[in-house]
Image (cartoon, rainbow, N blue to C red; front, side, top):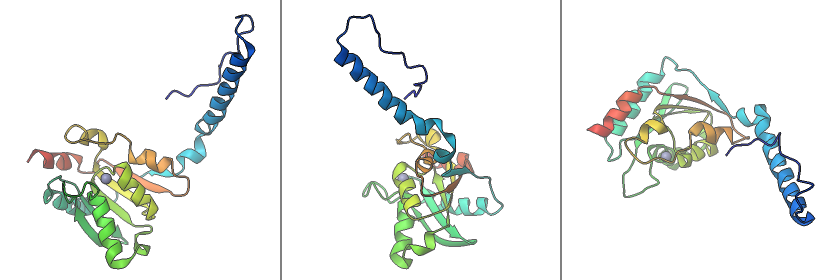
Length: 195
Ligand SMILES: [Zn+2]
């Protein structure tokens, strides 16, 4: 949607249209102008997603996520790490449960064993960029950093995707901040779909 209300034209004064219609359009224009204000103020809306850089330990953990992915009907794998220690690893559980994405499975398995507290501030490695469902779960659990391999646009060429980036989900979440790094070993993640 294009948001540009700065040059909203004034209601016509000589068109002969009845005034109720004109005033309704004026009210709508004012509503749209109000709705556009947050989008025009950049800072708060964008503070909830930070573009991170690759750290030395990232590749080794991503390789474990890729090993998990290679085990799955739909090749997606996830590893959750805190303070350099792997908390849990998991993969997509296939067509029997459409919500059992690798990220969801890892989160659920960890919470079932340990409860949710340990996920706060953890790093989640995943072979595919988190979908909106998984990114929602990541945010609700307080996971502070996401590292993914293949992006949603890349994945959409080999499997159906909801075309909303995890960065957008984070940006629209004012109560949490997530550092996001994408593209690590992306070619290897995509290659798993060709086996
Ligand atoms: Zn997902």
